[in-house]
Image 1 (cartoon, one colour):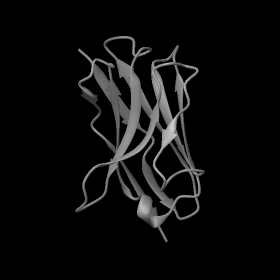
Image 2 (image 1 turned 30 degrees about the vertical axis):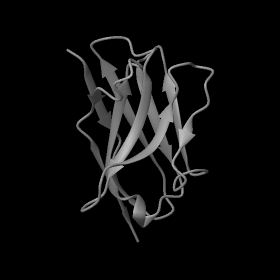
Image 3 (image 1 turned 90 degrees about the vertical axis):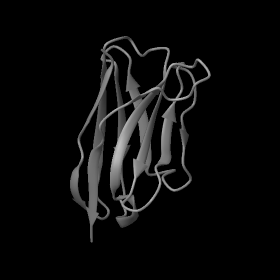
Image 4 (image 1 turned 45 degrees about the horizontal axis):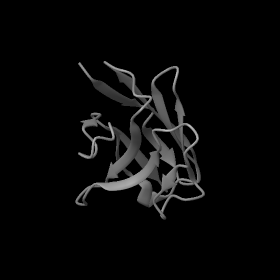
Length: 120
């Protein structure tokens, strides 16, 4: 059974940092594109960052997080991370990781989400 489990969320003051983890199980995700998304209360889910299926590929970020967030992967551990620095109030959301098997159907697997709350 394929599972994505996020962790690392919590309450942090504005300007602080958090590191989210997404542990994948059930298969090897080395050939998958792995992304992070978030959904704030009353808003639609939005893209945050994506890591290419290829280890040499460049990651992509939403404009709102460029320069502050970094996505990385540990292929041996089947885990993807999201390092979030200089957090802002507007970063408050439930963060989800997702896996795209690159079969033309988009992200097929999603985690349950982890809450990130940024306080003033």
